[in-house]
Image 1 (tube, helix red, strand yellow):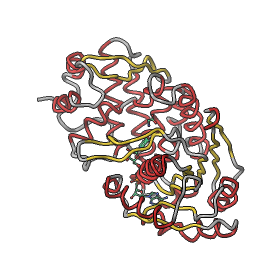
Image 2 (tube, rainbow, N blue to C red):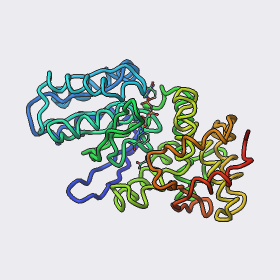
Image 3 (tube, protein in one colour):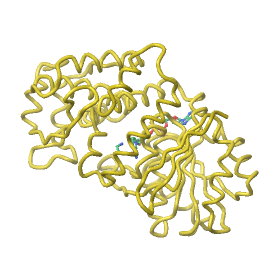
Length: 358
Ligand code: NAD
Ligand code: GLY
């Protein structure tokens, strides 16, 4: 196993560690054992792909430390981050007799992390949970910070709660079985961290050979952890993590959540947001081009091939649209972002003529 890197998210009595190493799944049992305060089995919420690949390793580690557990295995995919997926998890918790003193492990990508986290947040008004993220997106973003949610027919992440995990266990070796497209999906969020907060990370991502993935994951978790410590409830600085997301969400919506993975849509959204900022005179010229180069180096498409004008209705129905304004995250320059309440008409004129426009 590679040396374990450790970060702490300092949230007072809800503080927790993020542990990062290749091969760390082997230590899962000994890491969760000290968190157990009841005799009931630990529920491991996971999906078929992850459990298919890692049930032996996870089971052996938990059993070796005397941790009693039962898996709750869902089909893979965003469709399970839903009322019916939640019902399956609640049924599993009830069947296993999970109590408020019990422990739950989210073992999977962002879908499992968000679903299991929300189930834990609401089970008996709050059970503790451990995040064991298995996708790059989940290792650099969704497993840290305590945002949990399910989707409703009316929209994404509409039912949710802030519920911090008790521990995050990141085994970077698990990314070895992740399809290429999922790696790119996560790299888009990695580039985002560089764009909003770290010019040095951004520059490193633009070099070949680039930095080692475990170092990149550590840096992203460090940046996110610091932001969450200062703004856990997303009233200010945490909104910076939404760089590229306002337009990215509009692109996902426009494609019916089927055409693009989240990170792919965010890559388009980031380039559009940087281009808009340059046009508005608030972003250093050349930033959009730098983003294009770096995202493309990591295999992401950068120029939205759809009709940009068609994104405007989706922006208008954004759940954060208040009085015709949305919070746009814009760049001053690479490594330095800010939030600006921006009118939809200003966005429309800054976007006009970018990409395809009818
Ligand atoms: P995902 O969880 O659907 O995983 C993608 C695919 O990879 C799935 O098919 C899964 O079975 C498979 N997979 C996972 N780990 C694997 C592994 N190690 N080897 C092989 N296959 C593996 O998708 P995701 O991109 O991880 O997460 C997307 C979700 O995350 C969205 O619902 C999004 O809203 C949410 N999210 C939440 C936050 C947050 O702060 N809570 C932040 C960003 C995104
Ligand atoms: N992924 C955005 C956040 O955690 O705030």
